[in-house]
Image 1 (cartoon, one colour):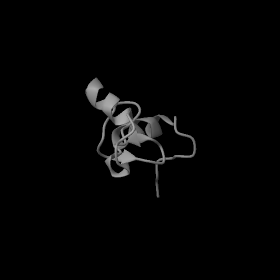
Image 2: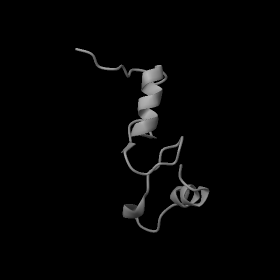
Image 3: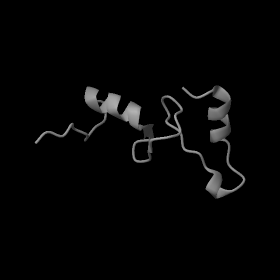
Length: 61
């Protein structure tokens, strides 16, 4: 879980476009971020296994 100050700083518009920090909207994690879902890999896996992300299924073959 990221500190509140880090999350607040990431929400401010950056001085330069390359300084944008994308964070998971649930936990605030910065690394392992999936842009399509606005989630980190850990939260994505939790929600996908519960079936809460539409159109995402666990692969089995």
